[in-house]
Image 1 (cartoon, rainbow, N blue to C red):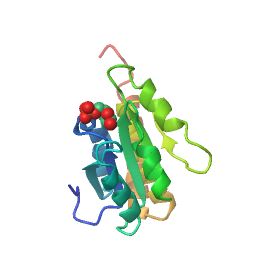
Image 2 (image 1 turned 45 degrees about the vertical axis):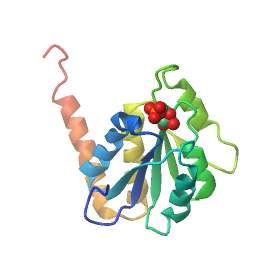
Image 3 (image 1 turned 30 degrees about the vertical axis):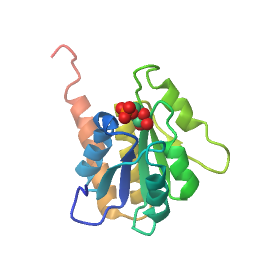
Image 4 (image 1 turned 45 degrees about the horizontal axis):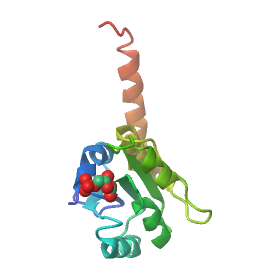
Length: 168
Ligand code: RP5
């Protein structure tokens, strides 16, 4: 699925369809900021050849970053990072058995030389990975995304400041 009409610059991938509940928060943020993105299920364990192909062709297809979410033995972000030098942003999905601690540790403990930027477990991590990818695009000179990010921050501040009595 491609979420806007322009070619995707961010890839959102996840180990299973069951990760979508979490990863949709990344897609929603990119949508809100007008960042063209694609969404795919790519499993490190069930479809390893697809993973290799996805990573090997990502830069050539115009992607600037990959947001990868996985749970449990969450090898997807690390294996993507082993096959591409594009920034890989890892989202630990909250697993049922261990609440996502397994996912977090699987993603964060990369060996020196193969970085994965690791975010919080669950929905907040997915949303922040998208905001971070947008910040990378803005820092690289995308003025439209920079403006959208500024506007998002302003709205967020106004929403909190305008609802500061928790009893209402
Ligand atoms: C991981 O195993 C996926 O990322 C998912 O979080 C977890 C469970 O997958 P399913 O059994 O729901 O397909 O590979």
